[in-house]
Amino acid sequence: MKESFYKYIEQLQDKITLALEDLDGSKFKEDIWVRSEGGGGRSRVLENGQIFEKGGVNISAVHGSLPNSLQEYFGVKDAQFYACGLSLVIHPKNPMVPTVHANWRYFEMYNENHEMVDQWFGGGLDLTPYYIFEEDIIHFHEVCKRGCDKFQKDFYKVFKEKCDRYFWNTHRNEARGVGGLFFDYCKADDDMSIEKWYEFVKEIGDSFLDAYLPIVKKRHSLNYSDENRKWQEIRRGRYVEFNLVHDKGTLFGLKTNGRIESILMSLPPVVQWKYDFHPVEGSEEAKLEAILKEPKKWISNI
Amino acid sequence: MKESFYKYIEQLQDKITLALEDLDGSKFKEDIWVRSEGGGGRSRVLENGQIFEKGGVNISAVHGSLPNSLQEYFGVKDAQFYACGLSLVIHPKNPMVPTVHANWRYFEMYNENHEMVDQWFGGGLDLTPYYIFEEDIIHFHEVCKRGCDKFQKDFYKVFKEKCDRYFWNTHRNEARGVGGLFFDYCKADDDMSIEKWYEFVKEIGDSFLDAYLPIVKKRHSLNYSDENRKWQEIRRGRYVEFNLVHDKGTLFGLKTNGRIESILMSLPPVVQWKYDFHPVEGSEEAKLEAILKEPKKWISNI
Image (cartoon, rainbow over all chains, first blue to last red):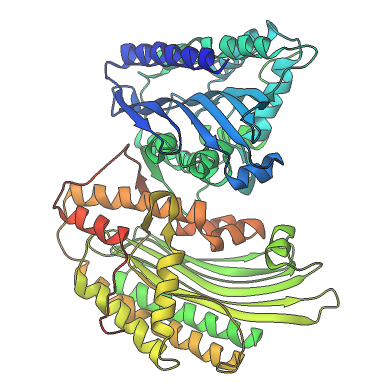
């Protein structure tokens, strides 16, 4: 399973970076890195493109002894692990184009005799707009739902709600963005074998470009003002706060001695922190804030 | 003790904000806030000044039930607490002027019968330059040492080393800045009564302006290039990383439901994250990086 999934994310990284390069006209820079305790990765980062101000599409496969803090978290002792996945974050230049994040990952855990004792998939994708175009958000969620519906009727609802909960910026009492899907600890059960979960993750991974690229194409040439850009940079600050204070993926990377530059490629290129900034009542900026305070159902009748 | 210390930090906030306003020509904005679980504070923040791009000098006094996570940390049950202090962070516009941080705080802990079971002081001050002017750093450390020397011969050495350890950005394997003093859990013992610790904290608090202002006056009119500014903004990213990932003060504030805007006033106004950025070998930027990798003794013969 692990070899097969790693091959999948290798070709998915190729597919996604090619499509983004094609649209932007700029090239990703590739870095191959090795983790001294076992494993490594292939990071691809693009900066100062025509459309994408900063974007990273990284794959990695790391293995070895599970760090103590994570042994405690999982309630195991002397455990070994293998983890691989693809992580991407794209920060467009134009504030009318949303930031996007996606991640698909596979995890195996072994006991002290190197026997596999557990295995699971996780992942998802989510959108962080700076200005609200409802049709874009609905499109994104529809693609998410279409992928889920091929597997189980309640997957979209369940994983959409998990996403809203996970990307909740507790200390700000607001969502990071307008959500999408989030799933974790997807293990074999009566309904879904581990192979079936693999098919599910591939389905969602394969639909990423359909979910995001049409939005970019539609919005990247829109005009924007310095004020729009300032708002984007302030909102990016909230993105930083979530990733550094709350995001388990980032903290997992820091705790397992991952490659810092690959982990922190998620941080936006230019960010502002203004003291006690509030958008004008009734403005487009206030509209975004209201939506983030109370996650919406983007698809009715579910 | 708590009333007396709170009065002290009130007048110290006045003294420091007046001196900074006097130098900059801009005014601090004051916000009085109340914490629903008990206590509140007085925040003063200045933005877009002539010299100071963003600065906050805040006092607060909060009390109530100690949050669970902190009860575990201190190994107590059903504890109540009182905490007050002054926190300041100043981010100058000119990259030749260092950022400075200082904090002086007092803590009391009570058992379920509201009897005080523990009390201590903590605090310190530390400098985060973007370009190295050795004489400035030595001046800052000399003022720190002078204050310490009035109390115990080894205080400067001990608290300077604690400062280097505390402001270590583990995931980057480098210091946040060039240090200063850091002390915590300063409790009454044979050498130092709690009253004596109070005198010590006042001594250090009173010397803050002597430590920092001469540096600002000397450097704020120096010329700088766009490249210097870019370097400052990139280094400010490390400041954000330290504060959000590692800083106990920030996390204490978030856990005790402090006022978010007062806690996060420490975050710099404009920040950049470039992927895998490294300064040119032999440059002034590389010189700073080398110093942060290996904290120096700024005063010889100690």
